[in-house]
Amino acid sequence: MEYNYPLTELIGLLTVNQIKEVLLPKNEVLKSDIQKISHDVDRLIKERDLKLSARFVRLVIYLAQLDLHIWYCKDQMAEHPADYTHYLVKAHQINGIRNKVKNLISQYAGDSAKHTNDTPDGLD
Image (cartoon, one colour):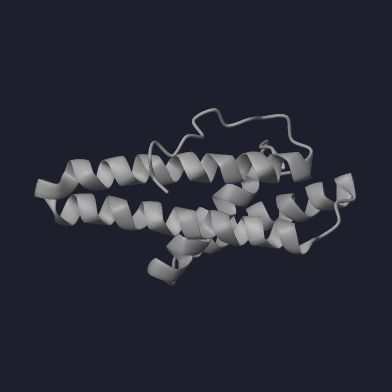
């Protein structure tokens, strides 16, 4: 294994790197990292004999979408300094939902780590 992370964290890392791969094409270091992470994910899935389900696929897709929304908020904070606080609060709220999703993935994956900041603070 390249990384000594729980499966849930590897999946989270993979979703962020996939976003970077789309936004920063031709980055060979990023491609190499994705291959290493993918290898570790495959290994842990095999070791734990985890079965793929539609619910799990949906959770991973949801996680990736939330990561993309957080990325967007960070871009907006840089582009619109006057609205920085607005986008910071929104990113924090989305991160609370993201942590809820990661906790659900952790249950599926058999990981013991739990993300505690899982309140969306008023975000519906």
